[in-house]
Amino acid sequence: MQYNSHKCSHSSPIEAANRMRTVELLEVKQENCSVKTLTFEDPLCSKAEPGQFVMVWIPGVDEIPISLSGIASDGLTSITVNAVGDASSALNLKKKGEIIGVRGPFGNGFVPVKGNVLVVGGGTGLGPMMPLTENLVRISSKITVMSGVKCQDNLLFLDRIADLLSSVDSETICTTEDGSYGFEGLVTSQVEKKLAAEHVDMIYTCGPEPMMYRIFLLAEQYNVPVQASLERIMRCGIGLCGSCVIGELRVCKDGPVLNSEQLRSIKDEFGKFRLDWTGKKVKQ
Image (cartoon, rainbow, N blue to C red):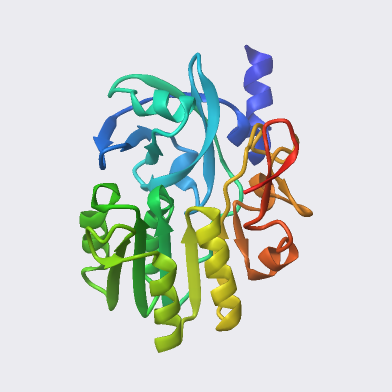
């Protein structure tokens, strides 16, 4: 016991973050038909930067990476989960009072900037944009939040966005592919209209990679810097296993948030290829 205590007191920040902690779910909130937000208390996660992620262990099922959708100074942290696979579906079924494991936070987050900024989320990709927007309202002169989903039932965080932006120069734009709410079509069309109409100082985005790749191309066309949060298969979360490699970068360690310069360095793979569970490069 003395040895372990001594070892812990001298552990590096990454060693401390990589140590699995079990946490109790303090709240489980249904966000829409298939998405829930799970809240727990963890001192390390409460100091995370928006855009960083945690490895979430679902006992008896798997461990998966999820970006933080809520970061509070009182120690409360949230993740927002869509039931799309075995692990996320099992996590989505968790109830208040149940236990999960977390490692992290890992990776590099978003860097807030002053000026006129776009925050673009596709589906549950809007999750990590929420703590980012909380930071942006303190420094940015204008914030436009764009949310793109398939239909009205998939919309997320509308009340939370309204509260966040209520006291600043801002705009909220929603798009649905079936036209059931907001503008009909893809959110990238609204991004292009915005870039053509006014000067933008930074684009932040998270969501399906084809969407982010299109936004990256638009950002290059209009000479606007972009920060994009990429998703890849991640097993270790600390840059050792190589399952998240894209080009010369490891998404878990160099990202998940990559800037324009980094995205240019992986433009042959970004939006086109990824590694599958066997390590084989496959098309997106």
